[in-house]
Length: 491
Ligand SMILES: Cc1cc2nc3c(=O)[nH]c(=O)nc-3n(C[C@H](O)[C@H](O)[C@H](O)COP(=O)(O)OP(=O)(O)OC[C@H]3O[C@@H](n4cnc5c(N)ncnc54)[C@H](O)[C@@H]3O)c2cc1C
Image (spheres, rainbow, N blue to C red):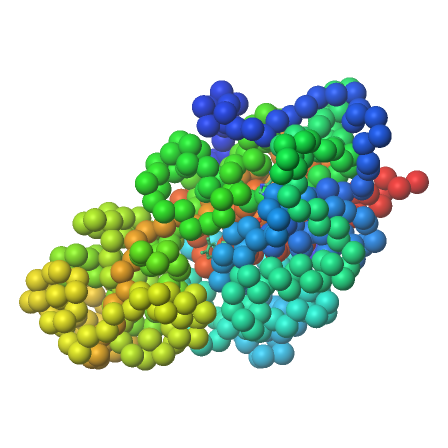
């Protein structure tokens, strides 16, 4: 594979260490001649035990390199375990065996199309190749991936979503954890990394180790030859969200609390380049008050979003990420996902939805009058909205429907949510963290939500699966880069 060079980005940003949100961040960089005496050593340390960290660890162990994953929680979960676990990949063995006509080139074009050409080209090439290799290797290690083929998400023209049979991120992470354990990846839990140690005598900011806090407050240290940041982004840090994503300042965060911006705090203290900080995955279908994801497959299969005035307000097929902003702009910041029984049948194949339904999220009505009473809107307005759906004819938002919704009608109340941030440390195609001048730091890598993704600098640039694409694809690449780096250094 030929990897394109890191392209300079107009959205590159150096977040000032004086920014209040960064200044108050507990992530520290310590410059010293060496790690304290008797500090244990491991060739590679990985911060974070989500999809990215586990995949990087598996790749390292496949290459025979010892590594330790340091994870803040007692059990690794991260946003990965909260996710649907849908990983897009093209030209995998599995996809080819299914005869699905896809290619890396088509996948890359669709990522670029969704981001209107803003996605960093070198990462689009690298991550799509990385995720292909990762899925094939993980399948060989016994993960039973399947290709989801009953619906298509906005922007994907073919079936390329790979998932485990349970179709949950929790099951995906459990499978990765199982393989990691079998391959000999050491995972140290309840280890909250707060310090990155840098050799003060090196001109190039060489990392020599980390310090991590244990639940009782003590700090332990580990020396290493290479460090991979797999600790996701800053969606769980309200101060950083307010500063960098003001449109989401009041939105519910649907991701993991550990997404606290450690990677960009360390990066800004090391003079690393940050990129695409305005990019994020929003979701316009966060069920309230149950607090769960309702899959956008409902919209792709004919469902609509209705506001408190009984009206539609956007083209639901553009994508769920930008829909977060559209929903938050409606009266009360809410909407109702309205659909019919064929869509409900599909929804019942999604464990997240079934659980939300068991907690009272679903409301069903014989006709528009019951639905209007439930929403509290004018019945005539709602009837007019649904009657305006004209199969085969593009509506005023540009959406074209295959059919009308047929009674009985079902509704779920939702709001717009922030799922995870897509901006982060700028990296090259090998996932090496870049300085502001574009040169790589010698032994610091980042991937997944810790690094810049492939969604550009805006909410609408997110193509379904870009999160796990960069976590699994990037984790695989970062592990491979460190393995090659350490093999070269071994006399
Ligand atoms: C509801 C929801 C649904 C989603 N569905 C999908 C989907 O289907 N497909 C998709 O592609 N994306 C999806 N996403 C996005 C996806 O979950 C993320 O992009 C992906 O999980 C990121 O993986 P990661 O390994 O980088 O981060 P994470 O999975 O968040 O893992 C990071 C880990 O680092 C740990 N950590 C953080 N800081 C420290 C520290 N200082 N020291 C030690 N440990 C630390 C955290 O505890 C965490 O375990 C979804 C997100 C949400 C919220």
